[in-house]
Image (cartoon, rainbow, N blue to C red; front, side, top):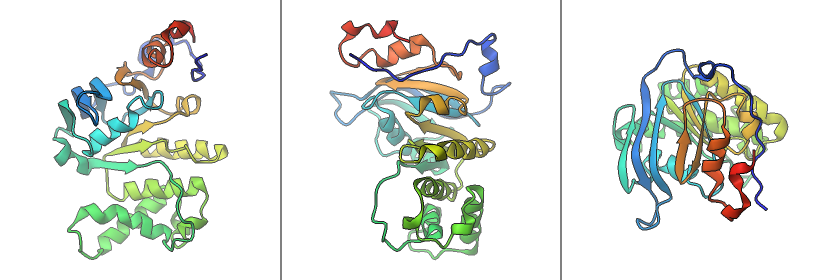
Length: 269
């Protein structure tokens, strides 16, 4: 038996009501006919076409192994596409990735490692100058601003190992903000966060989305659907219509390759 995520389908009287913006904004990410993977004979991503506009909040869902993290690696320039074109802010990935801020999944680490909150956030400034240059007054101002935005300034001197999962995630978001990005990429931002803290993380992202474009991978489908502006489904191929709702057809296209097709996934909602 194949178990699919639980979705709530909300009828929409006017599809334009769910459009992310009342007018078309500038493109910030474009993928055109992108194929990618680690083996040229077995691509993980196939024929990906995606356009993300300024101040969109895109939620990416899909099964494990469907290529969501691979897509993030392509955008970050960590994996070169097998074919196709990727543009970030109108530039190649190598030139455009300076506009990206990345928040990885929370990983377990040595809680006794002596690093403070502000030191973690300061790491976001490493790509803003030569490798061995000293931190400047401007760097410190930006670190303080980033901590203020995620409401963690009062804990700036606290060892990060003493923080809760939700607090650490806020610090990692601040580290990404310290790079002064125009686009924020997040990989499962609530995966290791207490359920009670998930809403506060999404509320934070909603505020950041007032001036930063967000692309987020998540399995927290029902919660995130209240916050994102558009939803895309990825399972090797990308299924996206630039709106907030998930349709039964998108589900069928995304999950039909899991398990035996005889189970009739297309009939399950």
